[in-house]
Amino acid sequence: MKIPLIDLKREYQEIKPAINLVVGRVLKGGRFILGSEVKAFELQLARFCDCKYCVGVNSGTDGLILSLKALGIGPGDEVITVANTFSATVASIVHVGARPVLVDINPETYLIDLQKIEPAITKKTRAIIVVHLYGQPVEMGPVLKLARQYSLKVIIDAAQAIGSTYQGQPAGSFGDVSVFSFYPAKNLGAYGDAGAVVTNNRAVARVVRMLRHQGQSRKYHHELVGFNSRLDELQAAILRVKLKKLKTWNKQRRQWAKYYLQQLTGLSLVLPVQPAETQTNWYLFVVRVKKRDQLKRYLAKQGIECGIHYPVPIHLLPAFKNLGYEPGDFPQTEQITEQILSLPMFPQLTKKEIDYICQAIKRFDP
Ligand SMILES: Cc1ncc(COP(=O)(O)O)c(C=O)c1O
Image (cartoon, rainbow, N blue to C red; front, side, top):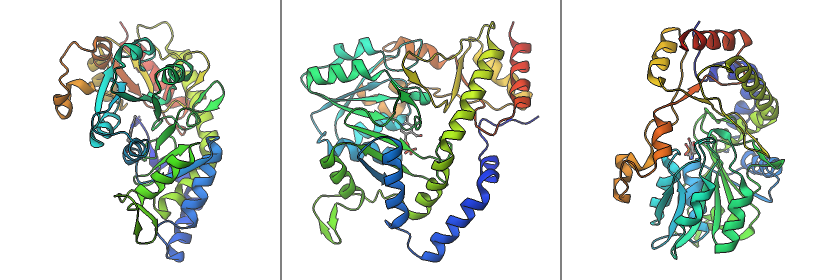
């Protein structure tokens, strides 16, 4: 068997007629930038996230940068975030001229350690970016309480968390602003780059809307120094088709996660846990294992592709050397980085494939 980490070819086969139809419709219509598809997608996504406003952007990365800018964060400010994340979370802070202040993870959830946020707050702290990594939501209650206490903005990097919930509410409906990525491999993936910013704050939505479109409030009236960060019509049309499938696909992922959990209990692997009141969208199914590299190689030999999210903690990446952190500064992040392994996870997997993966893991387990 050959089992990839994710298989977008299979997904396309499932929705091919609908996708081809809407792509044809956009091509025939001849409008590719900021037309009816983007507008409709924004309305649908805002509804999906139980939020008032949604602004489509070209990527999650730009969504984070534009959100920080719209919240007025820049040079001289500090933004607290987590050492275990994708580089774009931290790069966005650097791009607006602010300073990222990293904190370690909770070793059970692999998410920001809620106890470590408050000690990281200084007079310069303006915001917290929490990351719903692997689709797993951070418990928002304590974060929002701290933010109120210290008058901090809360930005949610929900790049991986479309369809996840906290206390039954969709990821995206908490904090000042939430950012999604529609990178193709995400649960809701475009056929290229795309992202969105959702918020209940009208002013923030207005500024992000201008910033994504060269800072214009109307054509050639540039109020702000803007960017070219628009979501395009083709991607919006594709995302509209896929948004309709998202609940079903996330349900299927949940079923596969449940099956993995059943099959893999009792081994030396540490299985993923979900904190109370949260429901993950199972973007990734991440296990923890001491002999990670050996297991990854062993599974690769059996035709099973796994991933590592992420192999180097933020503070040890050359890009962030200037932040001045050193090995040992975030021990929990450093430890899991050596041990985490993402198993194949996508809705179109089959039971037979998961059985094959689990049997291979059991053969390896000492
Ligand atoms: C946690 C996280 N933040 C930010 C991003 C950036 O999103 P994009 O790739 O759409 O720019 C990603 C995307 O992969 C991500 O996983």
